[in-house]
Length: 187
Image 1 (spheres, rainbow, N blue to C red):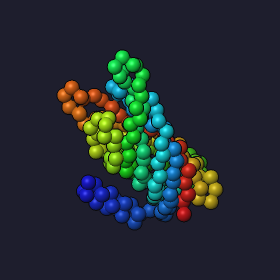
Image 2: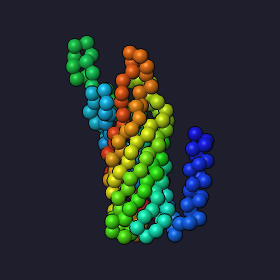
Image 3: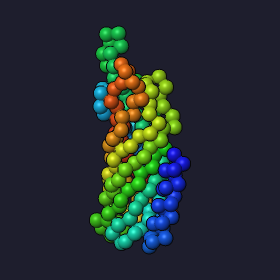
Image 4: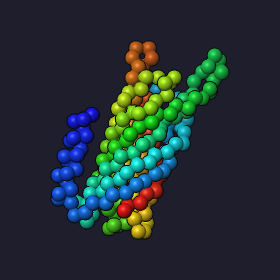
């Protein structure tokens, strides 16, 4: 973990020395989360909030890194003593760090983002299953800069890693999938 933070800090420092500009902001929004894989589940609605840093490399390309608190999960469905369809909310809270390439379709207005998201579990549903402490996702979306620093985003995060840490009979494949709608402000 310390090595990842150190590497990220060094890369950020190297890129900022070459960058034409740096924009710092905050954002918050809704998470529409669900599980994919071996678990039958329905979606839940939760939230995310945090900081945004955009490093402007050239006029049509930037790198955007974020540090977010992101509450995700799903509503697991299972058979409880012959009663099918019993549902239980499983909430998983993460510190998520998306690092995104940002391509401007309309200069300084509309952009497309894509890149990895590294998430670190801070709170899990203790009664559900053993959850891995790290989650990797592929992220893609769009951002619209509205006016005077105000922006809106839509993004989809596809889970790439199995978050179930169980083994043997309790082992099954579960991945986080989250659609996010956000608003924010660049200072």
